[in-house]
Image 1 (tube, rainbow, N blue to C red):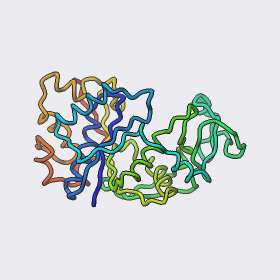
Image 2 (spheres, rainbow, N blue to C red; image 1 turned 90 degrees about the vertical axis):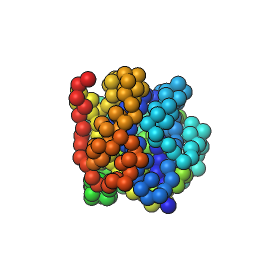
Image 3 (tube, rainbow, N blue to C red; image 1 turned 180 degrees about the vertical axis):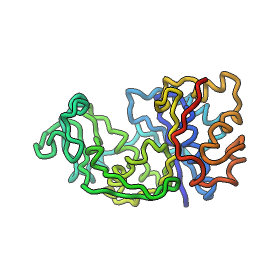
Image 4 (spheres, rainbow, N blue to C red; image 1 turned 90 degrees about the horizontal axis):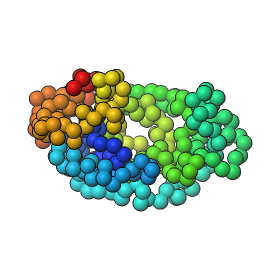
Amino acid sequence: MTIGRLAPTPSGRLHLGNVCAFAGAWLSARADGGRLLLRIEDVDRGRSRLDVEADLRADLAWLGVQADAETPRQSSRDYGAVLAHLAPRLYHCRCTRAMRDEGLVATAGCPGGCADRGWPDGALRFRLRPGFASFVDRRWGRCESDPRAFGDPILVRRDGLVSYNLAVVADDIADGVSDVVRGSDLLEYTTVQMQLWEALGAPPPRWLHTPLVLGPDGRKLSKSHGSAHVGAMRDAGATPADVWRIVLPWLGLEGAGSLREALPRWDPAAGPRGPITLASP
């Protein structure tokens, strides 16, 4: 059975880029007669807020994006067994963000040579295997990238908090997720996460990367693009149909005013690859 997921992060309001990816997840699961799970990705406890989570839930409900069940939130999960399983490929790294930004950290293999020094502390990184890797995306077709170009991913931060890199893969495996739908800003990074899936003994999911949505300033949508947030649009008098008539064409579904109206025409390969740049308000 197809099992998809909605995985909002309660650190910022739901914007049109999120809506596009969540629409793809909903349509993909419903078209296959599968299930759709809701998971609150609050692993970054310093940025996650309960009031923002409440707003996210309200926005999803207003748009008609319903899940079939809710899985345990990330902050309630224990990743100790997962880290123990990955232990042969983990090492401590003391490199700082400043070192990376100043070009003092190698991009491939072990940043700063930490893997060979046996540090007893620092961030915990996962050692990637060398070589290009490929996968098939349902929109983009066959894709290839060198995962080591991104550097060995941090799985546990210096402050002891589990990172997104570990949590998202471990949670998808634990939740039985078969289909991952997300923005194309993560397209090339997929080969990094595939190594984590494989190291944990699980086959990677089917991938679908929806168009990246940029603000009028050409930057990826964020909290600073207030007019592109669903809540702001609703407050300005927009209806759910108004939002869907903006977003669904990015998925090749022109003219549809709701997800249910769009469902019979859903084709994961249809529509632009992006990026989509919003017009100035």
